[in-house]
Amino acid sequence: MPATNRILFVSWGVPPSVTGSAAIVENLSHQFQPGEMALAGQAWVGAEKYHRSPELPPLHYLNREQTWPRRGQRYVRWMRWLTVRRVARQIAALARQGKFDVILGVFPNEFFLYTAYLAAQDVGIPFYPFMHNTYIENRTGMAERFARWLEPRIFRDSPVVFVANEGMREHYEPLYPGIRFESIVHTFNEPIPEFAPPPEPRTPLRLAFQGNLNESNIDAARRLAEIVNRREDYILTTYSGTPDWFFAKVGVSGPRIRHTSVPYDQVATALREHDILLLPHGLTGGLSQVEYDTIFPTRTVPNLLSGRPILAHSPPNCSFTRWLRRHDCAEVIDQPDPVALENAIERLRHDASRRAELVRKGLDIVKMFHAPVVAGKLKRIIAETMHHNSKHGQAASSAATAGSRHSEPTATRERSG
Image 1 (cartoon, rainbow, N blue to C red):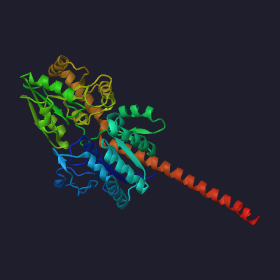
Image 2: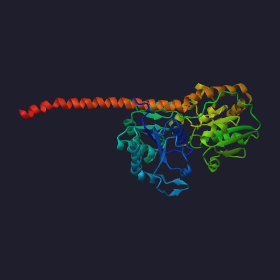
Image 3: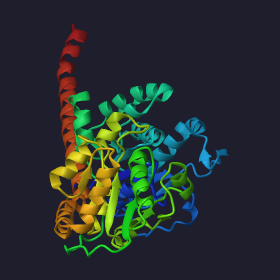
Image 4: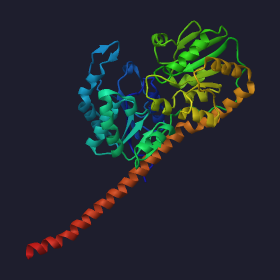
């Protein structure tokens, strides 16, 4: 069984993007040699200035030469679908030139998921979807009709469907009996720091939020921002790729809230400058209930690595809340209750033993997200399925050859008779 199959990793989010998917893809890629993997994805703003280490798997931008009309700095999305076949051919050409064994395609963007799937069919190599979010459940209208056609087709044709967490696996398995789902969790490459009790909180209390602001967390973040803005002894710093104007638009801003950003690999270090970390996960919003029930926020990992206590505002009974409580690595408030949230902040502020307990347990459980562990699981599963398919292919070929040999005398007798 080969140790590593060559993987073409196709994703909408790739460096220098600061999206959650880009962070997942980039961190995972650091565990592969240039000859074992290549990345392919969207050419983001700033891509022309991005310099990638030659020691990492190479990165290819797809459809760079196409100039799209823009509306408020956003692509007119429907026009991209006119290039489906063109981008699929680009991916297929990369797969052939690099002699890749498999294509791994990332969702939450169905355009790149679909083009990667088409490319794998064209080249004749296995396709493995990597679902960072649920799909059908978060589409409406024509997009939902397309999703209901595409999702079961891709799942049926794939040896394994990778999902981003156990909650997604638990959701999909009853819907698709007989299909294998495996979780490949978010990763990090930095060393795991030794435990040290967090320092005494300062005045004003320094709070931090890290990650992008979107429908998955706006309502919870807004509730926390309201608390900060009415407390003169709180300061909240956000580390995010989301623009400041959007924070202001949705009500996550104010005189005691500061917005900044740092490179992803520096996030955990930046978070150590704060006393308590806020981890909002939406209780309600524009996404489906299934999405809120199954999301595992990417920002969880750098929060755990920071060595600072976490306050999570997360829905009751969702898989993320259950996970946090099972491992007791964050103080959890699962109701939209500002008083309960403020009381929880104050408890952490004044309870040194609880702060230390949360940090110790967080550093222990974060080991499961270490990139060498996660990449090892990915390599093993792909190698197993490739080996299994190869054995079955050889058996089918042998059966077909034996059948053809057995039929020759019969045909001869018929002709001679």
